[in-house]
Amino acid sequence: MKRNAQTVVLSGSIVTLLLFCGAISAQSTKVNGLIVGRSASNMTLQTASEPKLVVVLTDATQVAQIQGVFKARRKQMSMTALIPGLQVQVEGSYNAQNELVATSVKFKGNDLEDAQTIQAGMQPAKEQIEQSQAELEQQKAALERQQKEMQEQQQQMAEAQAKIDANKAAIEAANKRFGQLDDYNIMDEVTVYFANGKVILDPKYKPQLLQLAEKAKTVTAFTIQVKGYASSVGSVSLNQKLSEDRANSVTQFLQQQGHIPLTNMLAPGAMGESRQVGNDKTAEGQSQNRRVVVRVLQNKGIAGT
Image (cartoon, rainbow, N blue to C red; front, side, top):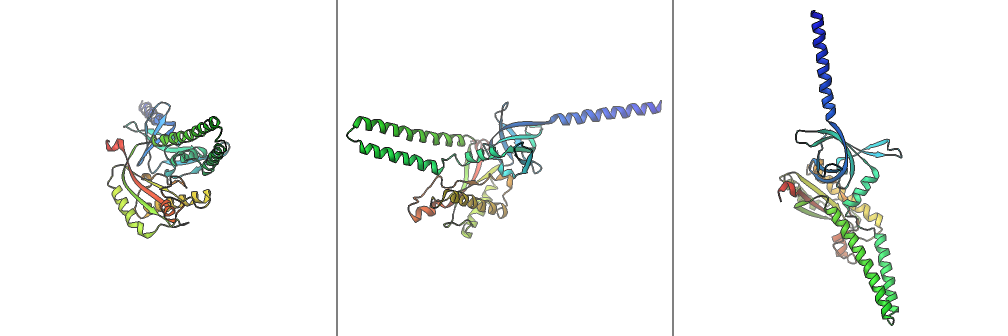
């Protein structure tokens, strides 16, 4: 009888343990969605069932890029790759606040490229702009040659204006799409300038960046955005690389010397020749365009504004 009682107790314990493990396992889930916001160690996901699912990133979260024809290979990635506009698959479990605590985040390589295009504001490529400008110049020349045929001239001018309006509408729509990914307050901003062809941070900007880093740490759930730019002198590919290296140079300084956590940094943006602020026909204008803009951001939802 004693042995039978022990057997019953042991069997009951095993059943309880299995039920407990099953409950824990049942909490693990996978979701697919679009990143629509990043704030410190949290990101907001838009899924088929939830427009704003909060996903918590921890030091143990594994981030990987799926590669290969059959998507069988994985490349470990930094959390800075998790940018707004990226389609991801998140695996994890829900906490008491109904937030999904991520154990792993996976995404495809081409999805990352699409998100980086959004991050850059979806600016048209320089070749496309030059092609549009060439077409407009040809139309203008045709109009000048046909001044005596006013009716035909007006028709061609209307067609040219329609193309300009279509280009403008496409750019505005792209910028609107990027702006809707999230809504931030700019808490601080520093602009760092670079010499022609240079990517090394000038020491004179280091005190300003350190001051920005200290101010950022006083802001609740802050995020730091770093965007690099280049003048249009030289090839498009070279200027794209220069803007990327300049942004990375400033980002590394903020992380290493400013002690900014990786989870509070957005992926550095390589903006290339887009959004020129100076006239690239002059040396002064070119120097204004060789820059990196650093901003401390706070989500307006967190700020209550």
